Image 1 (cartoon, rainbow, N blue to C red):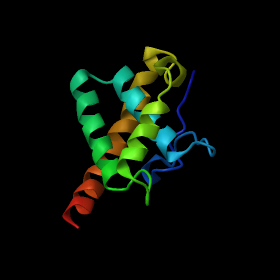
Image 2: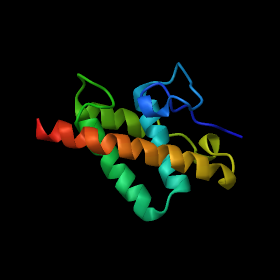
Image 3: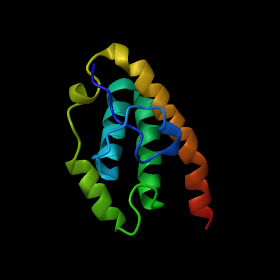
Length: 114
């Protein structure tokens, strides 16, 4: 079973399997791939837009140009089968993504209001 390390950049993912050497951009690219592999088209679309908003708000990589971060995320996308080996793994991955969305929804709103 392939498990994505979702702990290094998001406090709400503290219980997840951690991969210490993963960059925030790689982690974000992985999140987007998992949303596409496991989520419905509507979920994927919402997650992608929120992910882009998080990048724009500086939640993924601080003090870097948003366009450069997006370009890096796009170039780092991995095969969905590397991240989620079987469809049975999707339930756990989706629960983690939904928790991340919930956490980010308040942070993106706060960042936009500043």
